[in-house]
Image (cartoon, rainbow over the protein chains, first blue to last red):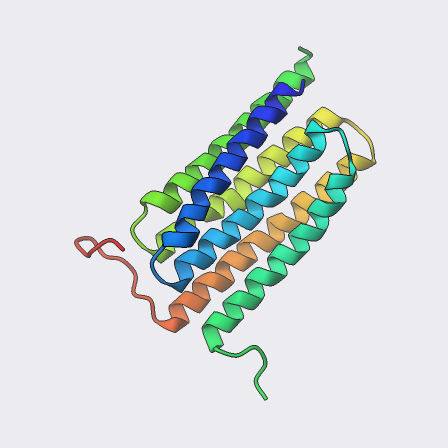
Length: 89
Length: 104
């Protein structure tokens, strides 16, 4: 029962590589931010699946921390792109 | 294979399908808002289906609680980030794509 997790992990890794094309090429700032956001989501799922492949539950703690960091990063980048500053005096 | 493993495999395959569909939308759609609509499917359906498949395979233990914590938190946080990005793009002044415009 390691084969389905292995196939899912390889597919998610291939889609991360495909999204990095849009993060490099995509026209304008906002297309790149969208690509970076979806790469963060897929990295969380990939951490969970890798924890099940190697049978090490420590990866789940890293997944929890990465979810929080990814959400806060997205919010801060959106605020900076909207206003041009992080905190107004 | 046990029946519970077959059920887990079905959920994992459904989540992988949603991930691939979101990536195809990120490639093929014409502008910023439609790409954001496509990747929102990765944030909700793909993530929830894959982690739910792992929960079914694991059974009842503390790992299930951790998986539920990750899934429930990101089910709230992902659409909130998507909405913040959409509002930032709209305030900045990106025009929505109409039929006949140039694809960028």
